Image (tube, protein in one colour):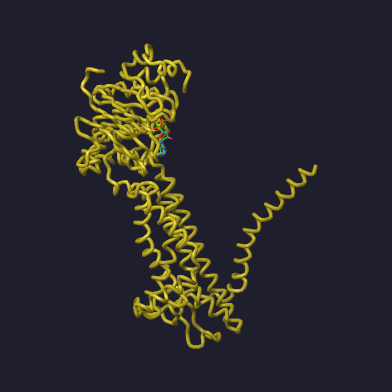
Length: 254
Length: 280
Ligand SMILES: Nc1ncnc2c1ncn2[C@@H]1O[C@H](COP(=O)(O)OP(=O)(O)O)[C@@H](O)[C@H]1O
Ligand SMILES: [Mg+2]
């Protein structure tokens, strides 16, 4: 479908939760250093698909996963794959920001610390670098020792992004990362995504079509656990091939 | 009109019941204070019983105060050593709704409901089985059994409601389950403190557990295999005396017990408020 090099390659993925067939025969190549958005009505399986990428899904009981998810050619679900190594490659932004129960500085330094960085100077550098990266540095540089929860929700979401970037991932997964945010914070996050796609592969779940249009290069339309259509943003939003996609884009199904 | 009256009537009833809760607390405090305050002398809290103490002569109940504090602190620490791994296992390590987690929760619910006299009898049986005498050790172990389900249940309540996304955040930073567990503990500090407080209150006030296992003695224990007095039993024995002065000392002991519990309560509240403000 696309000629670009895939970063994540999903092959015949099937997911059953509690015996329900949630994802059906998913095959898709997610291109490197682009923004790919999953759209579709709520409950269609967007979050579930996203969670198969960093293997958070199999933490739940009663989940059966078959098929392959290859990241840089390495099969996530092969028995010798080391899960923590895979997860480190991917930053995650959830629907609501969840800062860790510690101060602002420690939140950003957390990843580096658990991966063995002890040097105080280096940690200072990392914290400043990534806080600048999400343009939060000027807002928080005088109160780095404050609990992260004192920040506004929008700031918290940018903090969570900085925290994720600080472990140097290659992929950023976002599950409706702006749904709890006000319009201004939403816009800042969207701008950050556009900056980040030079260096990272971004996979975004969104139910806001305008957002999908603003930020994504490719769009995947999912309906009841199946991929209905996959193409460039223009193709899917302006000239959908499938009737279901057309109906969804026009707002007939939601 | 009738509906309005009905509404008024039930509102009145509810307010009455609500007030009666505070009323009961005030009455308890009033009773033990009015009867015990007179006997709450410096001697009572600083001396062990002298000859003839139980017929109204000099001395105090320092032996029981120290004994109770030993047993309570010991049992709470031992209880935490067992219950924290349990709670971490069922909330972090086990998959959601796994067989072992479900069984553990059910078991601790059942254990929670078992009356403490049964723990006392059970403790007594193991004590005999291992050839122990009534002692600080046997009493502490029995009280530990009593507080484990309290600790597990109360901590589980708070660990369970930590949003899954906190764990997911740690995992997606490449964290291990152990790292997630540590974050969960930090997140749950106020809840853990509440659990410790509850278990402390139960442990220090329970008479049935220590009745057959800790024994009673007038001296302060200096090693784990010696018997020890406890506050609940100090109340029990003195209250059964026909001598009024001794009975009043029982109320003084009850007052001491209540004051200790209140102090623990308020410090725990204070810390958990402070911590939850700063961390979460
Ligand atoms: N833990 C779970 N247990 C049972 N069913 C689940 C679970 N997670 C998701 N599902 C089901 O999977 C389907 C897809 O859910 P989800 O991926 O969250 O949809 P979306 O993110 O597109 O709104 C839904 O029908 C939902 O009920
Ligand atoms: Mg979702």
